Length: 89
Image: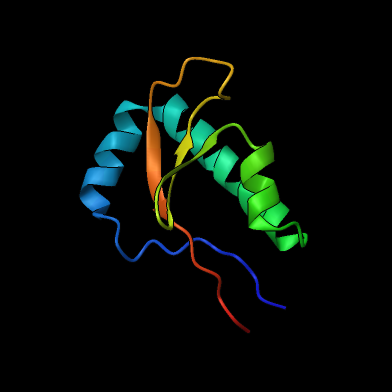
């Protein structure tokens, strides 16, 4: 079975560290949502179902998705853009 994971190869590390330092709560919220997303995907739920049921996840274009720091029912201030790919074992 294929698993989902975080690949940070394309992150500009010094910019991310600066952002993380200045926006601790936003960063923590986004990564909590990201880990929630990965848990759902690894449990076997299809990505389409996750996209429909997780309000913090928005499709930007193609295979690019934005994971917000808040639930969609709340004001979304910040978010991160991710390209999601499945790793094959």
